[in-house]
Amino acid sequence: MRGDSGNARRFISVHLPWLAVDALRRREPDLASEAVATWQSVGNRRALVCVDAPHLHAGQAMADAQAMLPNLVLRPADPGSEAELLQRLGHWALRFTPLVALDAPDGLVLDVSGCTDLFGGEMAMLAEVERCFRRAAYRARVGMAGSADAAAAMVRSGHNGVVVPVGGDLEAIGALPLASLRLPGEIATGLARLGLLTLGDVLRQPRAPLARRFGRPLLDALDFASGARARPLKLVQPPPALLAIRSFLEPIVTRPAIDRAVDALLEELCATLGESGSGARRLSLLAFRVDGEVQEVVIGVGSPSRDAAHLRRLFAERLGTLEPDLGFERIILRATETNALQARQLSGLGGDALAGEQERMLSKLIDRLGQHAVMWRVAPTGSHWPEDSVAMVDPYTNPEVPDAWEERRRPVRLLRQPKELGVVAEVPEGPPARLRLDGRVLRVLHAAGPERLEPEWWGDKHDRPRRDYFRVQTEEGGRLWVCRLGIDRPNAPARWFLHGVMG
Image (tube, rainbow, N blue to C red; front, side):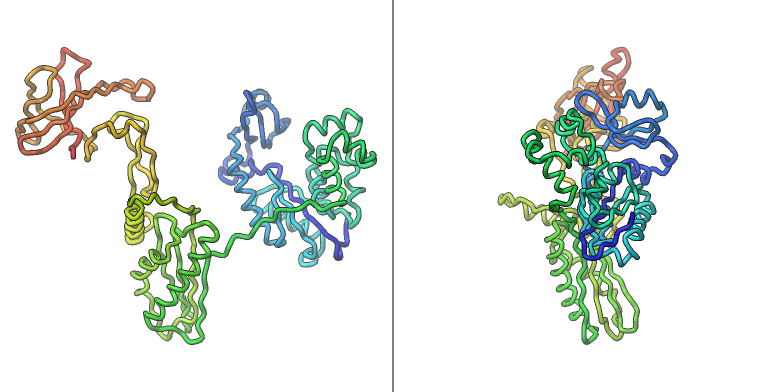
């Protein structure tokens, strides 16, 4: 069917029935020829959500699906990631029209009123939309009608590439099944019991009895699908352009002039970042010379930032590399990598300034050493074994510290490879009295312990021997953390190791 839109409202519905599976295949190309499905728990059962496999369907029990198709590749559904993906696709679809809305969980609505002639007509535009999604490796069903709900009902009933003529929505949707309206289950079941199986069956009924029995939701759905009323659409907002531009009537040559221009650009860009709730991780400054040469200065920060003063200090060290020659006629500052940056609650107890100084120090180190410099901090894990009790995390991570963590007295430096010691103890199971370390004999003045560590029966190293740890202070003033092995073998001599240095 073809339509001549003129000034009529026209909508394209894009249904992505295999959105989650297509996204998986984009990330894992080896799944291209495999039967794939995602699943989620529904009560006490696991059910398929998105399916691309013969003879299987969404909502089917996962156990039944595996019995029917043993080689089925299964992945847990991730509704949050899929919602973010749909949002990104909505932004991507702004290339077709400035009016795009999400039709969650797996669709988009494009208001293309007045846009179709730019693509050579309605059929040509519809084909171009489908082709662009296919090139991006997303299989889509597309359809066009005079209302968003009529177009969505068409594509969600399995139709693809259909253009409903202007004024033809009622006729086009009459034969569609009720499921195409996505009504609540109790309404769809009640209508089916009355023998009303298609939209046409329901539309031919008197409205008052329908309203009394099924309420306003049914009448709203019918009005939106028939075009009697327009459904309000929550449009996708285009992402803000995270850049600032300055053009100069007279080319700028001197460093003070360049500094003033960069200051103004930073203030403008940081204001834009604040409005978008994000912070810059990487910024690029492009300086355009009058002779056509373009020079670039790049800085990176470890933590998202929109602090213009902080970013200005980082740029100050790099701007000296610019060579203006006859001058720069334009400068563009772009945030090429950003992350969400929420407002921070200040405590008022004096620690906030210190935290800010630490962030600025880390940002300066990362900028000088490069974005790929290896920097980390430690975070506690669930293990009580010293070598497994912490993990390396991002330096800007704020790890949660368990309540019992402060009770553990641990060395400020833990040796990666413990050193074996020669030890003399006054009693067989007592603390050491003298230590032999690297050829030196150290007399112990004070010793505390033992602290016994038992194997972690729940872990993969449950067969480790138990250990006794002592904190000792030597005559020279050194405070050491020494470990005794061999407690499990009373007939064998104990072995002693230096495992760390106490503070």
